[in-house]
Image (cartoon, rainbow, N blue to C red; front, side, top):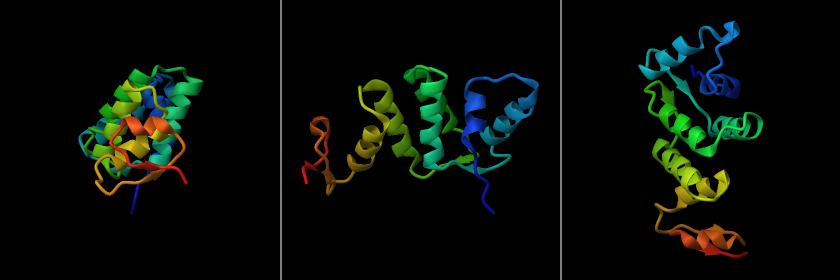
Length: 133
């Protein structure tokens, strides 16, 4: 069995929603923190969380990055390539890049055989082998 986490659960937690409807939310995340329960966080959900927090809730990028990075430390949250996701969040917070560019850089920067087809010359500032199609 696999347990997944939806965007709205993470968003409610990160915006500290204290309404009665979400009274079990904080104990749920405490259970995740100490691996009393285990879930998988899909990358598409993570990207949607970033989008919702930034566009709808107007949360500053640095606060979003910190919240996500802190969540990645929870022992009960499984996500593929956690180290790469942390690197993506760090770049997104500290550079003037969109999240997809940060994701691509984080994937490719540790691969000596990397290759990215793109017209975006901003990638040339990183250790990325970029070619135009």
